[in-house]
Image (cartoon, chains in turn green, cyan):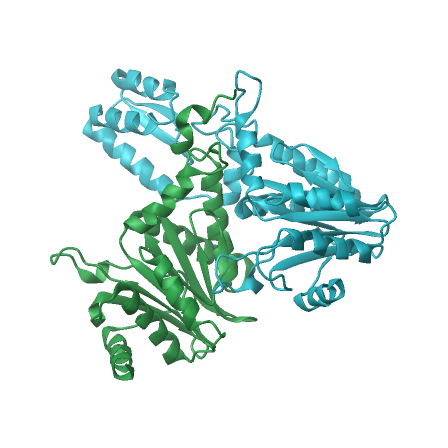
Length: 246
Length: 314
């Protein structure tokens, strides 16, 4: 009779459990949900939009410092859902990597290369015992020279996929169900439709109407491939458009 | 303040330079001695509370310097044994089994089905491509990968682990080419990949890979098909399957396989085998097929080509 689960360490470090699972990786996913925030990303015909909740737990906090949306380069954005500390580490490393890439190869790091790099780093944490997986799901967005607007999601297990639309965080599954219905027939959203689909998905899943200060929105557009975080006025325009539409 | 510089390997970082006044060498020594990985961090922090404020500052500076200079993940792969975990996590059970490898095989067995068939004039590999949601862009995912122009690979099990192996294999193939000025034979590449997988079952602080690979190629010895397991053992197969539906698939293959099969028959058989255990409607978008023939160029079939074969099979 075999000794069993490696002395009970399979829950503490990333070694296999008897069923062939990695508990630490699964717990990392739970940590992403525990942050209590839901994020949504939608890819349109010539733009990508990501939306996330902005929860400022204390009135004394400076709200401009509470953010999950980070520019990695001028052209690449990263939305990190999960534990803030892990998110900041990831962003710092990603920024370093993207800058080195630009220096070494002479052209901007493409979206999928960054996503692959993040995913490969996460995989290392799932295989080496001395580092735990990060409790962050990263959504990377940008405009690819050859393939147009691109949205990738990287998770603590080291998986990464390109998405037409996706979600992460507390209400991930409900949001994905909502988005599957919307994207069923492969619609090609314009910029405004993309942003409004993302925001209305978040509103419907969390069942509340947002004020502009309660959400963060980041976009990249083909006409202007710079990663841009929308200001409160721009968010307000979209919120008004949504409420008038309904 | 007289200091002794003690170089310790911090978890996954560059060496931590910690300076302790001689009177507190004892604490540093106990840090080094403690082997339980779970207690390392708590030891570090309790000892720092006993250090004088000046050496605390030094510690903070060291840590700041280190955390600013993260290495790329490629470096992580080279210092496997050099961590606090300089003991193997895969150890023998009293009955003589390596349970971590068995669990890795279980992980492979719960992965998506993939199979390979060797024909007289080529080899074919195929796999299910079930994506977690219709929102996933299937063009961004390719499970069948090219290692060299005449060698391809497919996996069953944990996708992220397979990426590591693909990257390493490609590098090894290139190094062989550079050294010997000829393309690497399939057996050599399989042997080197298997050696990597074996390393991770014995080195300190790492777990085995949760993937089995089917490596196919066409070289001077003709068409070849190898299966490599998480333990690092590999065999040449006439036809093989791995993943969820493995027992049904293998039974089906045993019935259908003939030694003088041609590649076209093999592709049809591969599709039929996948169809056996397939949940839902099979189409060019949710399976992948890779082939290599006498032209010695490995190629992945497009969705349209797969649809044509599916029509033929009907």
